[in-house]
Image (cartoon, rainbow, N blue to C red):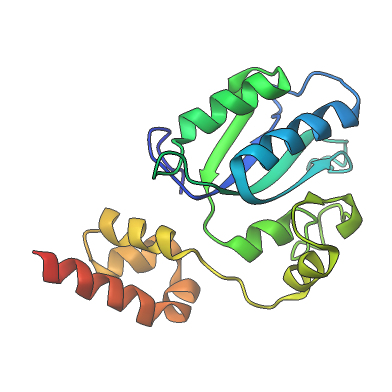
Length: 197
């Protein structure tokens, strides 16, 4: 699910660079230092990695891109809007905003694990040491080895609201596997929402 750019989010997944809008060819350290500076000023926790080994369906090297998993810090009692994050990253890295994709993070562990393609063995594999992060090495390793694919409660709340408490619609939105895993949480959210009516 893509979150609208006007919405405010705590947990976001970001991709810098796309086939249509590739990153300008610069030294890896240029991006890493600027992103680290941005993250240290704006995030509670962060992790990012440059994907420079990915192959497309024809076996050709894909465009250079950077994956990020960010837990934003509050600003003035609220989290920043996605359009604010987009504009700030665009300015910080001196890139076109159209080359940035920001989505709501549906799974904290899953988003971090995806940085190295942990659960996608058919994709290029990256090392944990390639990840630039605020986590300690031990914390990062624990997340990478975890079987728990934790879904953010804030995401589930948004899905319940978007689906107007319709359990079938929620199942279709997040998939049966996640619905079964988070059924009790979803039912608690639905009950809370219905009590307000």
